[in-house]
Structures are given as structure tokens and as C-alpha cells.
Length: 218
Image (tube, rainbow, N blue to C red; front, top):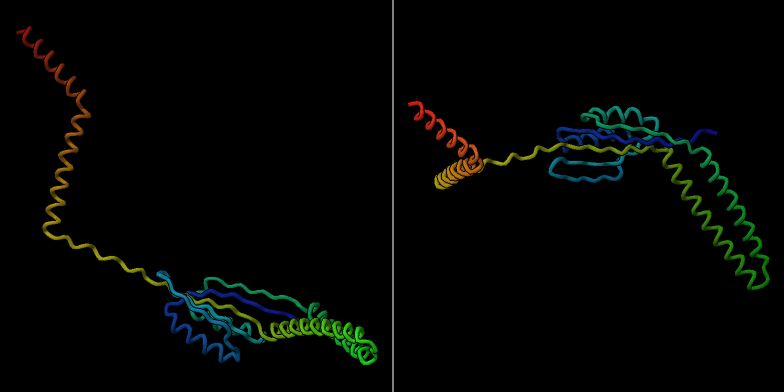
């Protein structure tokens, strides 16, 4: 039995021109025979971002990844593979079993004689068919994921933040600012003198004692 593998990749690429990069992505994807899935774009003050999903055949997975790497600076890249061979075989076997059970119930339904028996068998047939639909849906999803690998591509363009212009001050504003600065200087000196009053007092006493000493010698 051939192995059933699911390949996935996540790639973050910084670009200089997002619009041009998106156009190039479309060209690269088309050349590889792949196709674009979901796509979403967002923009903030710092960056412009585009996120998209690419579906590619496993044989062209590596080549497409190399092509996308030329769009700009690859900031992050991760690749994973998942082996779903056992689950794929289990789901396929479950579908076969449920379909065989459905046919047996249909055979019993044709032999039922009572209404209660008919209703009971029809209920079981309905339940089995729901289980078959669920298993078939999962089987289809597995086949799709195996047949086409998924690449989640995120492109982003950094945006330069605008530098605010310096405010233009009028002559009156500059005079008022200078007056306020001068007043702050005067009040600062006055407060400084208040802090120094012990030194001023001590200096006065020392000066008085020196003068008395000089007068006594004279």
C-alpha cells in the first residue's frame, strides 16, 4: 500500500513592495500548476500584510517553495509532514463495512411484516447512512490533503512612521517663554539662598569675630 502523506508549510516573507509581491505570487503559483485558496489583507501603522493559502501538488512542493523565497527576505519558514496511511485505510474499511451493513438492513426491510419492524429497520438504515456520509466526508478530506499540499504564505511590508513637524513658535510665544524661563531662574536662586541660610549666618558670625580680633590688636 502506498503511503499517504500530508505536507504543510508556513512561510513569513518581508517584502519592499507588497502589491508587486502579490502579483509575483500569482505568477509563480500559476506556473507551478497550483492554485490560490483563501486570502486576507490587513494594514496597520507599522506594516501592510497579506496572508494567503496555496494548494500545490507534492511533486511541485519544493520548487514552489524555492520560487516564493525569491519574493523578499524569508523571516520564518516551517515545514511538516503527516503520515495518514493508517487512518486512510481505516476510514476506507469503515465505509465498506457500513455499506455492507446498509445492504443487509435493506434486505431485512423487504422481509419485515410488522409496521414496528419496518420503523425500527428504517431508523437503523438512517443511522448507518449518517455514519457512511461522515466517513466519506473524512475520506474525501484526506484524499484532498494528500493530493494537494498546503502552504500558508504571509507577506508583509514595513511602513515608515511619519516624523511630526516641529511646532513653529510666534514672536509673542517666544517672548512669553523667555520671560517664564527668567522668572524660573530668579525664583530658583531665591529658593537656593533660603536653603543656604545656616551657612550665611555662620559666615556673618565668623566675619564679626575676625573684625573684633583685628580691632583688639590695633
